[in-house]
Image (tube, rainbow, N blue to C red; front, side, top):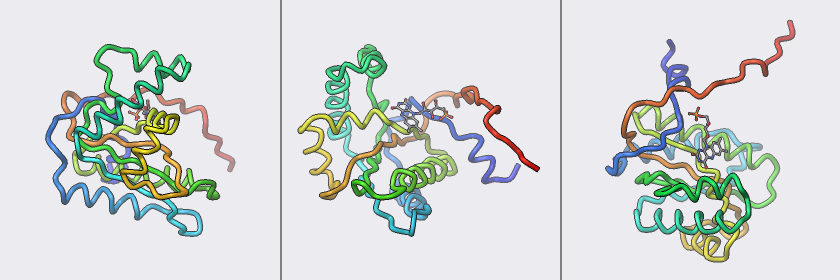
Length: 186
Ligand SMILES: Cc1cc2nc3c(=O)[nH]c(=O)nc-3n(C[C@H](O)[C@H](O)[C@H](O)COP(=O)(O)O)c2cc1C
């Protein structure tokens, strides 16, 4: 199979990581891929914080867990109350994705950048998982303050995070895909 298509097909959400940090040059290539993504009118009103500090990652995980448990959202609370649950699965790197508040198509732009991160990581043998639960950082002042401290610019909102690291364990198989969502009109 074509190499690019192979990378797309083999990428899976990884939820177990080795503690070793991602090599600096590989991390740079992954973040280059992020900013090579297309964006509406090439505005690039996104922002990325690459967190590679275990204490800060654990602090974010604690805030997310506590906010989610207090949110009354049953689905999130069920995950968070699993014994030993860590929202970033102890990944050594977490990329926080933020964007200018209220831009047209800006979440699409960030999604494009996020997918480039996942595919570049996969191409380098690095595992990844999008973490939408990071949105719980936004529902407490402590979480917002932390995002600002970590460099999220004024006037920007946090969208999601990506956990990254070398995978530990066997490669997961692909969760079922619904193929009945495509219409071909010829
Ligand atoms: C926007 C978005 C948010 C997600 N949030 C989470 C999350 O918070 N925690 C998690 O374990 N997986 C999360 N995922 C991963 C999905 O569960 C996963 O992509 C899906 O089950 C398909 O599996 P695959 O990525 O291995 O193909 C998220 C994926 C997306 C696109």
